[in-house]
Image (cartoon, rainbow, N blue to C red; front, side, top):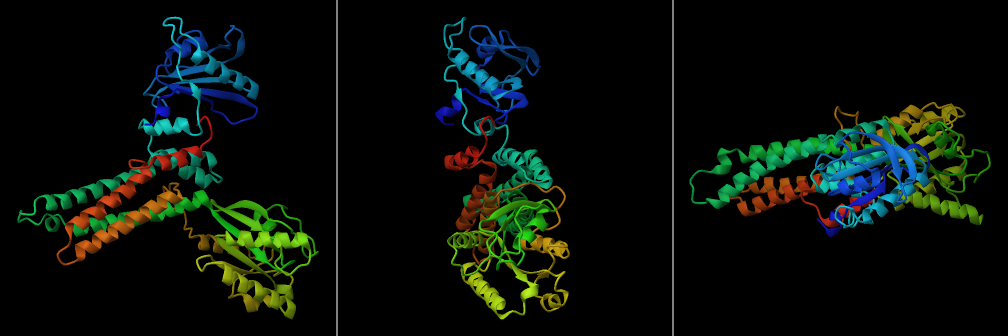
Length: 471
């Protein structure tokens, strides 16, 4: 632990603004003197006590509930004091200031400060201490933030499963099997004079194959969990008046973007997050792509191309009413050529043919080339939604899906690469056991980064700094 991890900390643990209840939380070692100073009495562990919270002059700041959780049976593993008051920002700031003041004030019994070094907590520091004190592992700590930030019901349920340890349990099972295989390889290295072929008799190849199969299953669920958490960014692109804003409104089920027959109405990006089967999709409507002499419109078009460059998928919207116009067809061809040049091949472009209600005959020729729909009537929208999920790589949510992050998927990919290298060594004639042992060690290290059993301080800093203060 760093030196700051030993400091007692305090913070407002509820969201900014007014509310029925607000909480000020303190965590540290030896809070008894601070409890006495703040509450005027000792508190029974894990029992809510209704009492006045008083300032240094004895005047009441508020009336509320005080709860004391002696460590290690607390959220952080340290002594924790929670003061639950009315949720006004001024009241909570007064309570926070009173905690800091009482921590620095001398204890009548010893003459020393009640809680030396008490300071305001940094973002995520309470959860960071829970991790450092082995109350939760790193994957569970991240699940707390994901549960708070969940934008869909499916994401919230999956984050809750991760918080209870479902994801961690699978990682630990993989690690235990990997450790057992490493033990066999290390034994063979340590006793080369033995005639018994440890690896052959223990079916090392079979164990490694089982590991790879289990990893593939975990990887598939982790990718689905990462998709639930992150979603995908979908940009609607096309010429002016193709119906991009109407399509955004239809997908969102609300009038978010202004729709007029005037070309160039949309000048800037309009974004809305929707969910399809619990998967968040960040839909972005952009300015129509064309040559323009209007300075403001040119800025909007430049921003449209910036959004397209950062997309996970692009909906290239075509106008069925104008298919036969040479000028319109040339404009679509120019956009298609620009998309092919500017986007990597891994970014899918879905051709969407709009205004099916106005030009039903024209749709027949394009039915195989993309999705035909009417943003005005809603016909064809369900097919587009299904195709978006297919492009995202979503499958029907398996039972017990847990939330995962991009870093978890990357770590599992690294594990898979090392296991494949190990398998190649086992398949070789006269395998190099030292290289085999090293690949298995690297695989275990990559696996351990998920739960935090092997993580750099820089990684921990990045993860916990994304939490809110007080959590």
